[in-house]
Each structure stands twice: as structure tokens, then as C-alpha cells.
Image (cartoon, rainbow, N blue to C red; front, top):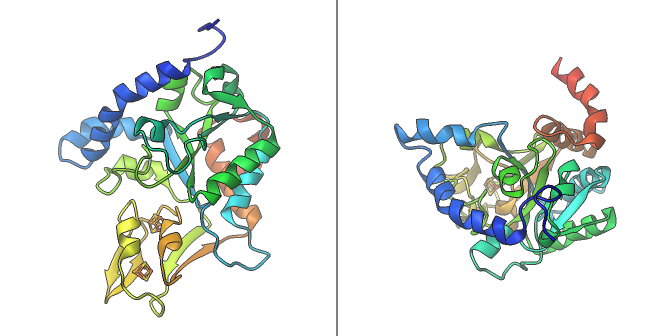
Length: 288
Ligand code: SF4
Ligand code: SF4
């Protein structure tokens, strides 16, 4: 028997709310850079109520053994958090009625608020199950987005700071990744690259085909003298490296410890996940 006191909204209700709010959010993203309109729209995309960090779990570049893939860093974060819940299906791909990539690769919810997740959404999982889920998402070419966005606690009826999501996103269906090319300033600030990850295109290898330009969801790649050049607008998702036929795009990474800490600091600044509180001291020291 469903009880609103024990659990949040069941799956049919969340899907209904997503269907109602989807056109509004897409319209808000599209118009967030328009004069006048942006002053009305941009508060809805403001930090700390919106923050999304790309983790390029899809990139499998050849790196020295000492350099970890971002996937490893994400797995370490997930391993540290006790409360994990996997949704049976991706809400965005379900909304858009697509079956590829596999709809079974749903988002992962983390933190104390998962005790409010209605069982119709999915299940609590062990660390081993969560890591296997990340591997499956990576093999399907999906990008991980560590997200703390106001619409999630509203939809699932949970407290705001107790809930984080890791979404596994494609290019054409994700509410976070689509309609970002003409984003307003707050939307731009809300979607961030993880410090320590950067991408660059090698002009000696690039043949100027333009595939990466068309793929980049934030228009962060320009053509200079017929060669691709990645700008500071890059959000670090890794899709350009994945699609480049010449393997001209290189990912540069800090060491694993630093990347991991940067990810933890990012989470700690917007959410209260008990297992990550031990890193607060280090974070405060660095912030002076
Ligand atoms: S996809 Fe690769 S080869 Fe083509 S323009 Fe981009 S970096 Fe250059
Ligand atoms: S340039 Fe664009 S596609 Fe490439 S990593 Fe940055 S945001 Fe992603």
C-alpha cells in the first residue's frame, strides 16, 4: 500500500510530472539567453539549486598506467557512499520513447534521501551492483553527470540537500545536455567541468572534418585555420574525444587523488552526504 508519509511519489506520478514540466524546462533553456526573458528565467537555473558536473566515463583513451580514467574516480566516489538506489529506466529516454541506449541503464540516486524513493522506481543496490552499473553505462557510450538539481527533490518528494543523482546521459534525450548551445549565463554556470580534466585537439592530427563541432553540446569547439580548437567553454564531457575519427582529441587529467577530491568538494558544496563529510576539513583548508 502506498503511503505518502513513508515514500515519495511513485513512478507513474513522477512520469506524469516530468511530462508536464518537460516543455516548460526546454522552453526555459531555449529562451534563457534572450533579452528581458532571461531575467525571468535565469533564477530557475541558479546555483546551488542547479549544478551538474560531467564525468567522461565514456572516454577510453590510452593513458599511462599511473593515470586513472575518470570512470575510476566516479567509482571511488560511489564506493564511499553507503546509500545507493538505481532507477530501472532513464526518465528522459523513457519520456522521449527511445529504446537505445538500453533503457535499463537508469540514473543512480545517492544519499540519505533514498529511503524516501518509492520502490516502483527501482531498488537499493550494493557497491558491487553500483560499480557494475557504471561499467554498463560506460560500455553503452553514455556520459555520467553528477547532478544536484531542484527538480529532483521536487519530483521525488525528498529533502533537497540529502539527495544527489548520477545520471547516465546520451546526446539527444537528456534534459541536462540538450538545448545548451544558446544557454543563458546561469545555465552556463550550472553545468561545470570538473577541475583537473581538460580536452584539447592536436592541430597536427586534426583533418578539419568538423564532426566534433557538431557533436559538442555547448558549442565549445571552433575552427581555426581549418583545425578544431577547444575553448574555455568546454564542460569536459569527452564526446569530442569519443567521436573524432583521427583520435586528435586528447584528454589531460590530474592525478586520481586530486580529481577525486575535486569531485567530492563539488558534491559537498551543494549536498549533505554523511560519508563525504570527512573531506570538509580539507575543503575548508583549501578555501582558506
Ligand atoms: S573530429 Fe577530430 S579530425 Fe575532425 S575536426 Fe574534430 S578534432 Fe579534427
Ligand atoms: S569540447 Fe564539447 S564535446 Fe568536447 S569535452 Fe568539451 S564539452 Fe564535451
